Image (cartoon, rainbow, N blue to C red; front, side, top):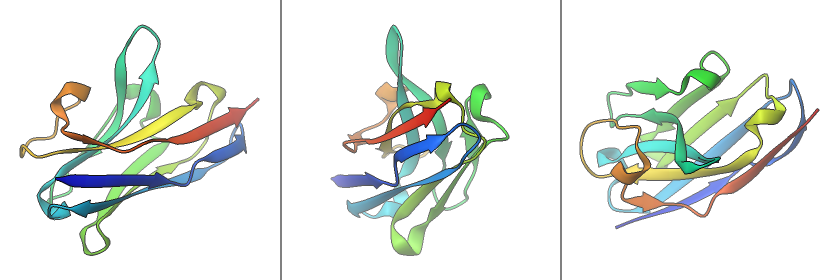
Length: 124
C-alpha cells in the first residue's frame, strides 16, 4: 500500500513557474513507478509525465515537453514536477500516481495508487 500527498499547486500568471511535490509513504517508494496526471475533457485522466523506478527514465505528453520536468528523490520518498512557461491550458488538478509493476506506462488504469490532487490555475 502506498499513500500519496501532493502539494505546490497555486495561482500563477501565464509564463510563470510552479513546482509540484508528491510525498509517498507506505510501501517502499523506490519500487514504484510514478506519474503525474490531470483531467482531460471527454476521457480519463491524461498522462502528463512519469518516471521509472531508480533508473530515472522519464516520459512526457507532447504538450508539456520542453516545459515540464519530472524527477524523484528516493531518499526523501518524493517526486517533483517542475513546470515552466505555464499556459492557461495547463490549468487543472494535478494528481500523483504510483504503479507497482516495473515498466513506465501512460494509461491511468495502469496505476494502482492515487493522491487527492493539487490545483494549478494559470491566468492569462
